[in-house]
Image 1: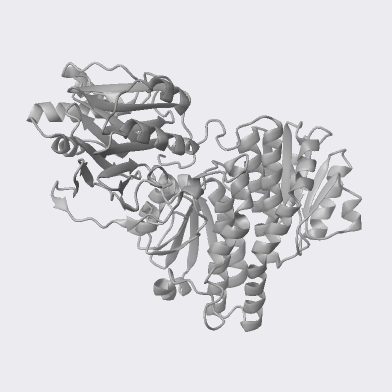
Image 2: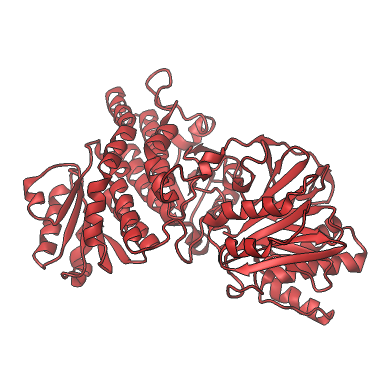
Length: 611
């Protein structure tokens, strides 16, 4: 959630580089920002509550520096304030530290340090960690990197840290269950909690593994293992470019990313539909295909928007393969004593590949002998490395906190998996396979058709933007689309929105219906259409206002609703890839009309790397 940036090099650009990186990490969600550097044998810090721009104002008089670390904080321990902002300087000012994650035993460590005379000036677990490292450094007369190694032996929790001391000669980094990347430039190194601050600064990047420590100087980078011995590392090419983190003429990253979906869905499908022969090519799972085909059941774990794509995947996989599929919130999975064995397949879905709850769920499943698959957007991420095999969605950098193109990428990947399994298991023949492949190939251009008509959707949103409550309703595979539509609206507009299966409306939610609570029905012409139309009529009979998202121009429907959005026709299994797009546009427009910050909604973070 929080963001880390660090720089060390021969150029005097450390402050500028760190600030630039912090601006790029604003999308992750934060409430304060700060940076630290060493000058004349002393650690100096600048911190500000609120935006990075406030920190930037405080840094204008800093002279040239060759080393600095910075941070954007999303409050966990302690309220948003300048005192609780990172970096934190240790009590005896030996070092400064920035930290993502949560130190679970910080209260225990804090009591030990208090007994040693340490005094604390913040409410954070991070200040405890800074002092714990300083305590080890002074007690054993250790170099900074050795002090970090020694101190972390007594730490329980998740962390990605960057530490500097008053000598200003090095930055020491370490990680466990929280991501950290180091870009390798020309006589310089750039540190980031993800690759975003590194783009354009370095062509190669390494991703620290859990329990590794990096010692970064102006001229060298060394990686140490859990036993504090030097170990080899392999740099990867940084495949992202600056355009990925720029708006390219759009007013918001979210709208840019909505409009990128024809391209990003095509990227997910590219090369996978056009393999020689009839089959779908998914090289990332071919080696484990025998285990997949023998699966007793499939369990999908995910959080937030990814959980909705998982539900869509359940409908697709069960409908096409007849393999039972369970979908779990990753945050609940470990705590219900799940029944898993070696014949099960557990799929984790996550945009970032770093979602803490999803990672923990997969680690548990792995200890039970299950086959682990990852459906991930970020190459080289923790969950990608944890999985036995997987599918990259190739959606590119998603800056907007409310996920759009990553969601459709996940649904596209799940459709490929479901179709491939169904064909291998013999549940679909060559003709049905080709129908599905042909329909998938049409999806990017069909999404573009919807985008080309976005003005009409925005006009509907303008009419409905003053309402404070919405119901989203759908049946079958459209129910998860309704869930996703409700989530998008509440995330970025702060309007109360709920989603239900349309058939459940009479079992409670219909009590909410009046002129002030509009309903949005997701109702393509599938085998549930007639039933859903009946549910819609029940709402209209109670003076409810209705918007319908459909793929058929039905006179009965058009005459029954206040507004209708017609999407192109596709096969029933693939309708979520189309019906979700108008809901994204609708939510974005409503939020804009209500003067919300659509890219950085309040209280939310892009990558949830703590439980």
